[in-house]
Image 1 (cartoon, helix red, strand yellow):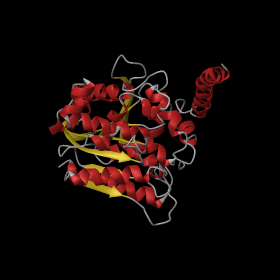
Image 2: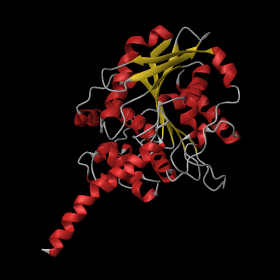
Image 3: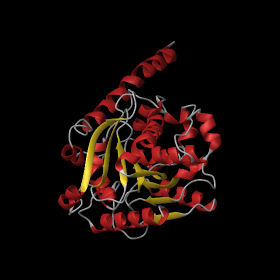
Length: 331
């Protein structure tokens, strides 16, 4: 009886402790949806600071912004579109998916970065999506697919060419973007998830994957701060590895030779180094073109989300390499 009582007490306490931890973490993200300035200053523990491009004022003069367009009836289904005021008649389209541990973040916090991409001659759709734990997996994947469907209908209004599409994101957003790329390029995964991709594989020209997670079997071993809380919030399972559909989130398991060319980067002090290098290795084993920016052995101490600190030379150089990748694969 005593052992049974102790087990009952442990079960009763488990969920409140999990919820308290999640609420604490979500409080840290509380300001993220309020404004670009607020969201830029509040990040996952151990992440780099966000800094705008040094020439953001000039970029803002050259880039048109359309805010808060509704792309679906699902909660928090809004996107911003950025495009050059004097752009070409037909420009490639980039769908950008923000990170934030699935429980936080917003499109506003990625606006300056996305505008820098648009300034180089792209139509960028920067999306919000419903956050965990109110919205569980596969909600954001479904929303990203709906955002692509929206762009199929409306991209041309902004000069976008939906025959030249890229998907991209950072951190949790990179995982979502990589899964969207897998859905489009892997019929078996799309059938398993019962999702009809909004675009054809021939339309998807590349994936931009920044500091993401791509193998749910090994991600706990990275010791990324609070990774168990984030993924339990997203999947609704504790531990997250017990989630029945967990393998769907592991992009390394769904790569085929049809996966689009990928640009992958991660800082040398980011716990997700092994996740990025493994994905690059798997893609190359299928002869998928990969452009990578890794810093192993450099001792630069570049943290998670280093690419958004555009006050640094390393972030600016990576942005330049991102734009080179986009140019090569959008011809």
